[in-house]
Length: 477
Image (cartoon, rainbow, N blue to C red; front, top):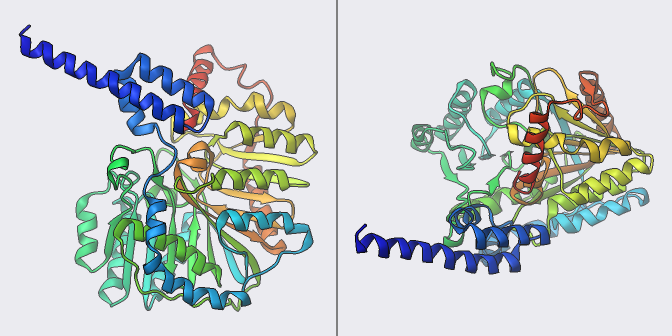
């Protein structure tokens, strides 16, 4: 071996070991839990060749730069605030005494509960996209569109054509997508949109030198806003599988909502913060809240993400679980909660709350699916009932608390949604809407099987080993 290669090898080794020491100090100072801090420190000092690249990608749970952009955007955002704030007292609602404990959510969301909202429950893809395409066609001023996944398939091309047609008609169309979620979307799809006049931007997850390798963060929000008068969010992305056309999954069980009323401006504000981060632009939009003449539901919009000072999404789940008095039903495609949420579920069940978690029987991500089995022993013995949805794949993100509080959004019951993804959830305080959500849940439970105690113990050793290995990676799932 030549002297040149020996020197290069020493330099590379030195780089990794020095980087391991520097990053180990960073892990001690910044990693959220003591267990994680110890695991990263030992790995970085012992196996730097492997651990250093992994830390660059997975080592942070705080998204750098987004919060700074919020602070520096004031000159661009202040005119919006000046327009919205004077109009809001008419729409801000003070919850009844039996719901006062949910006002803490307003502090988490940095937004108030508003009244005079209509919320429509949209079940599955056919109903959801029929409403979405109808509202796209009705747009007269602008469309704000944001999805985690967009595919170039039958639904994706229909969606593309609808946006292009509106842009050509003079409606301003803004499309924001997550570049990781849309990694398979052809560049030609986006170029066609741009050529028709659609303003297209990736979220720019890796924007900024400190985020360059941080591929672990995602903008998981699915949002559409029409003229500042109606807004959509929920579990559905744009792709044929969400219409039940996948040969692998068959039917696809999902839930979206359409809201009209002053809550629309809150959803719109969350979109604009993402759009500003991605483009440093603030479009001219309708910021005049208007009451819906179709309903009077109390709604709180809760955006959350890794740039928040607090772990907004995780705290939302924790508070909702602790607040439940007689019922807590949660539907999620993924079940990888952190220890605090597991403990809250245990305590709720021990208090006599009817705690049910609805999960899919089939797997779309094997590692996360395997992890869910590892929580059987921590939930079932204490009265938490787990259900596995049988037909097709269940992807909805819905919660029902007692008889009058429901939540629908993009957040899953997992660590990734708690602290790594940008999410958005709408909490609705209304008995009539809660009844519709309850009926929907009961239909889903009728199409599910309840997990029996001891199911995991009956599995072969290789399956149980896979479950334990998957559980080790729970913090990044």
